[in-house]
Image (cartoon, rainbow, N blue to C red):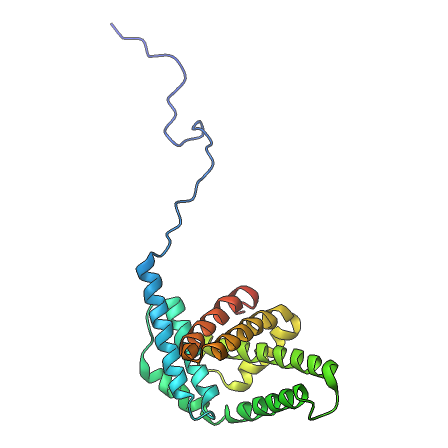
Length: 217
């Protein structure tokens, strides 16, 4: 005697076509705790101190900032400080090509001081125009440092070319880090003891802003 087969709709496997179509929910975002934030702040301060010491002869300022940008970029993405020797090689390689940048910056600073004190004709309108141009050029310089931090092997010429193209096609990509630099400059003038901290944190802000406004192609 045979038992009749059970009748009714076949069972649907879990997760199959008949399962409820619930919307997919992303897992909770993992945020760094206070210890990781403190470690990042301490590393940025250490980088800023190193850049400040290396830039004391003034003519070494661009090379020091370039090496600092690379260190900040590595800390930003890898979560650790980079090795010292590659940074030293980058510093030596960019030292002489960076000297003209210091001279141009010094001329622009002298021009601003002369306009602000009335030593040259032009008055307030020329001072405002010159300050705007200098701020925009500072943004181009910041993007140049970011480009060097992303690819330390490239030359100053290549980094400046990329930064200039970004500043022309996306003006806000130069204006945003320039405004952050102006804020950092006045903070450093108000409390000179914070200069090393300001340097490290400004380089970090430049990379964060540039990743959003001028991502690598």
